[in-house]
Length: 462
Ligand code: ARG
Image 1 (cartoon, rainbow, N blue to C red):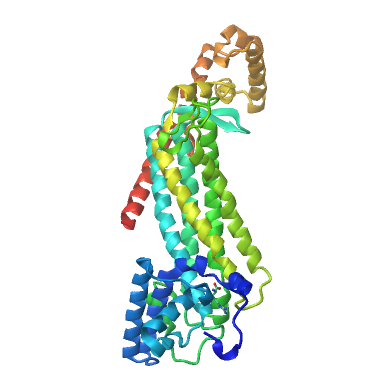
Image 2 (tube, rainbow, N blue to C red; image 1 turned 90 degrees about the vertical axis):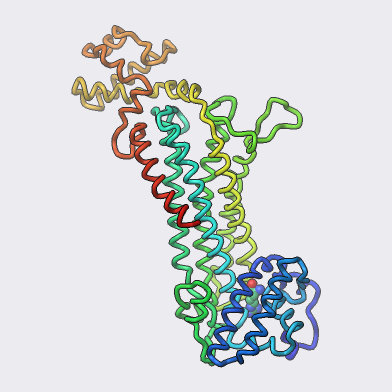
């Protein structure tokens, strides 16, 4: 491509370190779409003839078909997807193929292609995340009244409802989606026509190409247009947070499905057996979702480090932007799909959950609240009295509600029989009616609110 200036070909190692075709061939359809938009604009502006533009467009269509039918030979000697496509076009059309690269450089080309790829993958993720939210909401509605222990420090804290726990993830995923949507809005500017870095002397119409490629507008500064990778960084940062959320639920599934907890049963479809221990059902899919966050955050880190300290504008360093970003966004998509399957099939073991919900003196706060409400005790005193009652029960190794009224009165004489009415886990969760609280009634309301939002989102995506 640049034979004019060179008398020797590259060293074999140079070819190996320099070529990106092994991974950037993934950008073929974005590259071809970008070229078609560019050549249509060149013709519209009378920079190339209508005949040449048509031949180039047909050639590009043929190349796309060749790639999709596995008939295209990618060559490392041609470095990257941009030159592989252009070279094939020259095979097909001869010298007129060379008109395509007028008023364009690989610098604005790659920035455009990669942006389009990231944008597509964010759109796919948004749809997938809506599906996952939907799966959580359905579980929440179905099990709005199922009690389970709520934890802090992984110690029993207060009873909560299974539905409420499911909806916590719906909220997280909602923020994840809004971060990705936000990133998409900001990235939706076209670098095409920035050319190498300074713009071009040809009378191009960047609004036309931006429009053809679904961008909101062209980037306003050509130096920034070719050297900006914020779009990938923002996508990866949103992806990292989302993957972190998924890893938290994955961890809960691992704990919950263990023989020690038995809170839930994961379906066979997302578990594996052991080759030696016949009793085993391992939550492999959940473990992998828990682990994959590592490579996703890794990709964000890697790109931040590649970009830091790079002088404007393009440097070949920036070729290192793609491989890990592809990997990260594809793996996130896989994680979301796996998690959606797991959530759909998830079966809470109501009996175990209820038993566990009542253990660890989880209704102690309800007892303290009763002392405040009924005896008008300041909360701090109530906390102290309750602490003594818990100590008494714990010493005898019994639950709070197994203490007799006389036992209770030995610590606080004004306690009445009525106190037992707040010590059950069902009563406890039903009383948590404060906005955002765990009461089944609240859960149903919130789940229905989400259902409406998600049904609309999913219909819009059809
Ligand atoms: N393969 C290159 C990349 O991914 C394309 C841009 C090359 N530009 C250049 N000036 N060498 O970054």
